[in-house]
Length: 316
Ligand code: A2P
Image: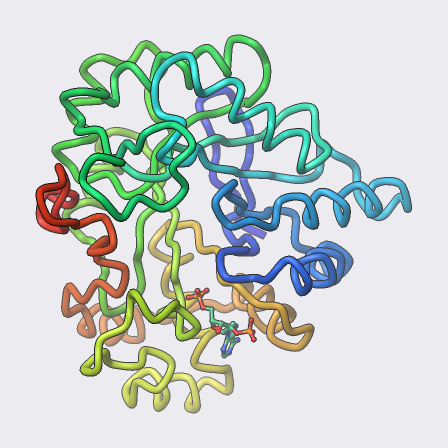
């Protein structure tokens, strides 16, 4: 499988397993199956509430001799209530304990959003901290310290706009290595991808299949269903592959890491095989034509009356 290379020469398999929305009861089997059939990259986050089960699966896989730690790429993310220089390492250590690991390959700031300590899901204005009160630059110092202490090999961010990346790069001692954002044929993020390429920052696509299982809070009645797109369906049929494979292959061929979530053995295999698919120039152009800058995860759940964040301020 194609790999993306980091500045310290680490190599990340371009296609990984997403675990957002995988329930604790399903994720254990999904991770075991995924690694057994060849996945070597797992995307996790503390807020997904399933790192303990993932840790159990990883530990068993290593004990059974299916895989060695150094063959795996494990990412996790710092939740919003743990921003601030001194909060990063304790949060990371908790994640490492849950995952039963000594180090991560990649640790990301989950959102450019800060919440007060202990607040998992803020719903009132006073449960948030603005980025003036709790600057990303301060949190980043904690992320850099985590690299220095060997708790994670690489650091990066999620849901950062070009402007927020620029601000961070200006103050970073260790530059962010990756930006994980929602990205799929309906939201191709061309400007952001170009900027990241110019700065040697990798891009990772969450919701690469359009997250048809996304929670109610991020659903609108007029949302187009990516997996039912007629153009992708006809391109996929002509090529003898599935719609999901067409979508994932398009991301990979753009040099973007994709982390499709599945808890189903057949779909896990299908998605992994997408990394082997090659698209023609014409297929690439057809897929490119589908962009409509359509975000499914707008971040509106961070917008509360009198609060410091709006879905516009997040992405500007
Ligand atoms: P399941 O877990 O039952 O396979 P995303 O990665 O964009 O968040 O999308 C995840 C959603 O897409 C889940 O509902 C997942 O269901 C479904 N899914 C994953 N792989 C495929 C596939 N190859 N074909 C169709 N649906 C898929």
